[in-house]
Amino acid sequence: MSARILIIEDEAKFARFVEMELSYEGYSVSKASDGRDGLELLASDSFDLVLLDIMLPGLNGMEVLRRIRRSSSIPVIMLTARDSVMDKVAGLDHGADDYITKPFAIEELLARIRTTLRKNAAAPSQEVFSVGLLQLDPAKHMVTVNHKQVDLTKREFDLLQYLLENKGNVLSREALLENVWGFDFEGETNVVDVYIRFLRAKIDEVFGIKTIATVRGVGYVIRDEE
Ligand code: CA
Image 1 (cartoon, rainbow, N blue to C red):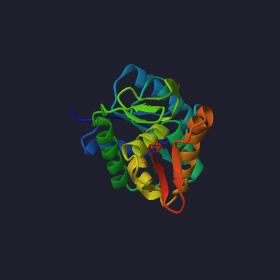
Image 2 (cartoon, rainbow, N blue to C red):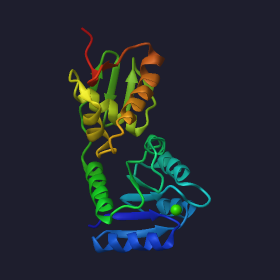
Image 3 (cartoon, rainbow, N blue to C red):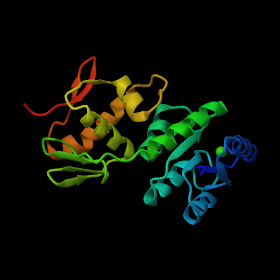
């Protein structure tokens, strides 16, 4: 069965172009020209992936994403003409799965779609990871410290899970980018530092523990206490 993709994009010519290319690849495609239409379609029909333009009239893409995430974990790839680290961080922080900057080659979009669909099709791990008082349960998508729940964004959760999966190993920023973000962030490895800060603010500072250690000049590691 072909994957169903919803494009939320106000530029009609561009949306039509993407629709034609995706249909040609065998995807089943629906279009919405603004955020409200897109949210209505999502509520009334079932889709496998959303391509969401960030610059939309009325509700902007970021707000549409926020509303999608209130009720759904459907994979979302953001489309943007802008290209700054903070825009990417903001989108990913609000739960986007990936990002593509306009103008892009259609082959790149197709590759992103395939990767995102594949990642989301993979069964969640049954293992529960822990270090000290911290526990991460991938199946329940839950993190707790001393049985108190910690509210993390999708990207923070994925980063923490990857560090825990590799407990004891020092991971470089490049390795974290490649395995957590899943693509080359054009060398902007400071995104990793930004997310490590988010995690420390939500975990270490709140609970007075030390979870993620910095190894200067190398990267980050989670270690069991000695
Ligand atoms: Ca637009």
